[in-house]
Length: 333
Image 1 (cartoon, rainbow, N blue to C red):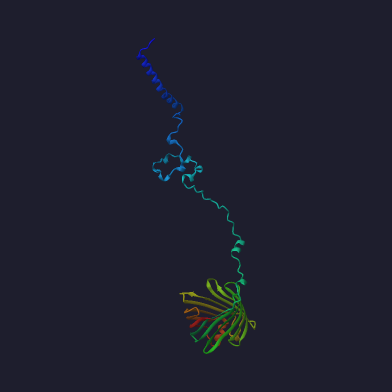
Image 2 (cartoon, rainbow, N blue to C red):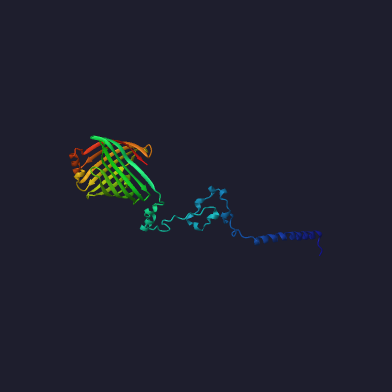
């Protein structure tokens, strides 16, 4: 059967359209077959955050919803704070010491404060010396005037020394009392010396010799103290105690109180000395140090005799007490 030209042309057009539409249809079905479903792909906002690559300085923290985060459920111990740019949390301070502190023992105290070896203090056999005239004065009292002195000196090293001490008094042109002590002294502490030696009396009455032993040094609160016991040829036992203190009113103006007392064990009429407390002298002297070596002074002194000693002096037409104004100089070399 023969076809008309119009029918043939229509069939050719339909075939051409089918040929052109086949590749597009195949590509569309292939895309649907390989593309994942929308439920499998995570949303853009739920993707994991790389904190190490985030620049916190450029983030707008004011827009972040910190209130919605439940920090109580977060495990901070597993967070990488170094990668986040934050300092790691500080560990809590210990409530107990890592090592217990041992109790201080007697051995620890001995190691911290060892005893002083006075034998090792003398490093070299150097010889030094000092002469101090503590009082060289003129006095004017209620019953006359006169002069008095008190001096001491030593020569030796830091531990061992030879001491010389002397004191006396003159009145109305004659010497009423005078003595000289020669003693060996040894340092027994940084502040105290022990003295052993002899004392020679020249006045009053006949001269006599004493064996002497004593101690001198700086007592607590800086009281200069000297205590000496004497044993005489006749068996007489005597003692002298002297205490001085220096009160610095200024660096150069110094007030010096003094207290001295003498004792005897038995009566000696020949020397006008009674048993017990014989004599007490209390003085107050104000000196001005032009230098440490030279210092003039003025002051007042009161002397009083006690007991049988006062009776012996009154029987010899002497007074048992006297108040004196003094002026003198203190020097040392």
